Image (cartoon, rainbow, N blue to C red; front, side, top):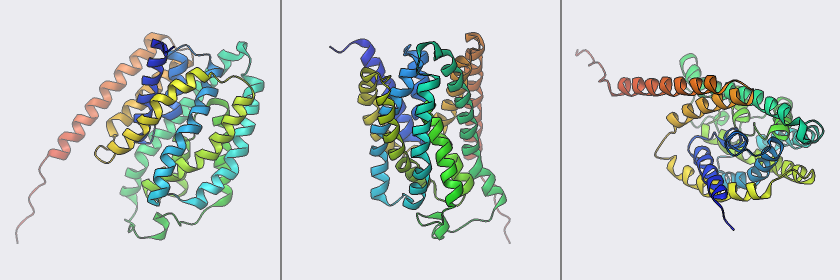
Amino acid sequence: MIELYDVLLALGGLVAGLMVGLTGMGGAVLVTPLLIVGFGVPAAAAVSSDVVAGAVVKPVGSLVHARRGTVHWGLALWLSVGSVPGVLLGTLLFSHLFGEGEASGALRTWLGVVLLVALGAMIVRSQLPRWRRSTAAPVPDDDPRRGPRAPVHRVATVVVGFLVGVLVGTTSVGSGSLVVTSLLLMYPLLRPSVLVGTDLLQAVPMLAAGALAHSAIGVVDWRVTAALLVGQIPGVIMGARLSSRYNGVLLRYLLMVVLAATALKLLGVPNAVAGLVAVVGVVVVLLAMLRERRESQRPEPASPTT
């Protein structure tokens, strides 16, 4: 029988799916803390359930990008060479360090730390293109380094995949925010669509391996997973369709604010402090967006006539 709890979980999954579809961010950094802080799901079950749900949702987005030709298959392959063993090792560490009920507090702390790392990665990701535009000469769109056949730095790519896999195995966080930021740093000329498509594809084998491993250790809450998928799958599809008409900038910054407040909460900071961070952050984001909108509407100065 469907209860209010299941409906609310599905709505939470829908919001997370919309965020992923609209901004390319959200996923585990939103779902796992939501399950722990908002729904009171035990930390271990929240991580495992989100890994399993992600293994179902990621192929939906990756299939769209594969059909559009916005996937760097070689890059996804070498990321997977590192991420699959990484997520298996991370799941093994998870089962030994956090699988027991008394380790819930330690897992919450570790998750809070990883969320702050993910927040830093999101900030770098949002500002890096602007920094690059101000310091580098423009590169034509038809340059091979911008497309799905750019040369691959194999060793560095495998190392990044492995480290992200370990984090995903222990927290479910990192398959999106950390991978895309790392790719931006290593492959600064890749088009954004190729970055996102490659990230989605490389997450499929990693999360599939992680889902099998987490299922084997027996901490997945299948009711939570099913309710999340009911919302996440249509949410990702709707968000992807809306993304062509809305760039998601405001939502991206608001997500960062929510992430900061949630990370502080998981780290044991008093509710008043976490709430203050959320309120101040929202105000700052709205003011910044208003300022940017005014500047974009300001008429350009007339060029002098000759």
